[in-house]
Amino acid sequence: MPLPQPDGDGDKETRGRVLVLAGSVPVPGGALLAGIGVLRAGAGKLQVATAASIAPHLGLALPEALVAGLPETADGGIAPESAEALAERASRCDTVLIGPGMMDEAAVANLTAALLTRLEAGQEGPRFVLDAGALAGLGHDPVPLHRHEGRLVITPHAGEMAGLLGCSRDRVDADPLGCARQAAERLKAVVALKGSCTRIVAPDGRAWAYRGGTVGLATSGSGDTLAGIVAGLLARGASPEQAAIWGVYLHGEAGNRLTRRIGPLGFLARELLAEIPAVMAALASEADDR
Picture 1 (cartoon, rainbow, N blue to C red):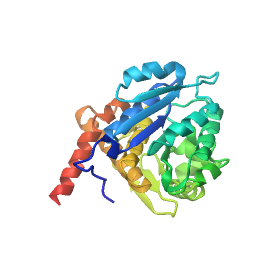
Picture 2 (cartoon, rainbow, N blue to C red):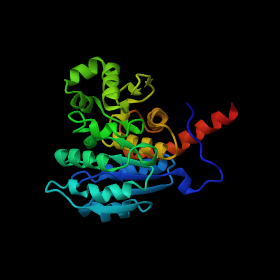
Picture 3 (cartoon, one colour):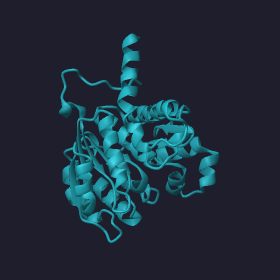
């Protein structure tokens, strides 16, 4: 399952467009980390939709992206009524990432369900990565996800997986592979269950594991960077399984490079992102040597 390589004659349009729906007034950095992750993974064009009051600041911090401000809830999240305008924007993109830094749980659940319901399903519609806040309501009603079967990746940690399945975190910790398989089948999505050993599971039960990461990856914002990397790979043409597997690998190897240079603890999630191009280049060189 090789990592897709760009066409030497291609331009930014051929490497895909990504819409990142992320951030909130309390956690604006989630959108920044995810957006940079998209670009570091090699996607061609980036749009970010976020809460209106933080959009100008995010635009300055991320000059490579088009940044759109959306109506806010009282808690500083993105208002669910934004779904109609977002659906039009998302329909012109190859991949949509929803969730990093989104803190108003009820609003995020309603917005995610409304957007998934409005967007065209099948080969004409975008593909999706759902992370963090976007996962909150899916355990109760997975039907909006089912419309996009075969075009989805979700990236929960153990606590979010417990919420998706309506079980205790202890159960997830005791049987991560079984829980990931249950969620993948129920949601009809590729699942990357994050942990010291990250499990990637397809809806048909096929499973992969990545055990090569470092303890330093367990840091604030690390999941946002992973979600952005996966979305970038999807936009470049990877299948959901490829994007999840290689996204987890690139994220983990970036952590390993920082561990060797800085130490096992104390590096920042933002520092992972600058390592991604070098890890991809090393993989491409190995493939050429073979």
